[in-house]
Image (cartoon, rainbow, N blue to C red; front, side):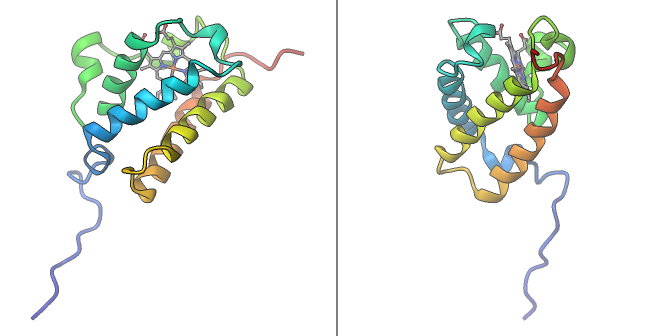
Length: 136
Ligand code: HEM
């Protein structure tokens, strides 16, 4: 008897499916819990992060290959343009990623390989959001 064929990642094998909507929701909730307490991020985020979290979850759904919920509800994300009103320095990008890294490690249902791919993709996007040099 031959072993079943192990298919490599197919278009159906999205990061969204591997993570799953419930785990994604938990991750985003934990992430903004950390953002709300990070001294480098507090100055640029609203005090009430509930809408921000809802938008982020909708965005990540499509970003990871799942339903394009952000597009459906809010239109094209124009991510870099939407971040231009906020001074995003390299320090703030690192702070954002540190909050995400902590949230990832606090989410045990996230498989290590999916976690690593997610963090790599977010690191690239975070780098693209930097729009302000470090203050002298
Ligand atoms: C590099 C560090 C980043 C900083 C400091 C940052 C900061 C912010 C701030 C201040 C807002 C506005 C919050 C509000 O008024 O509700 C925002 C919104 C948002 N950010 Fe970021 N962000 C960063 C990276 C990212 C990355 C990497 C992504 C996507 C993977 C992302 C996705 C979003 C989305 C979807 C919104 C909501 C946009 C909207 O208002 O419709 N951000 N971010």
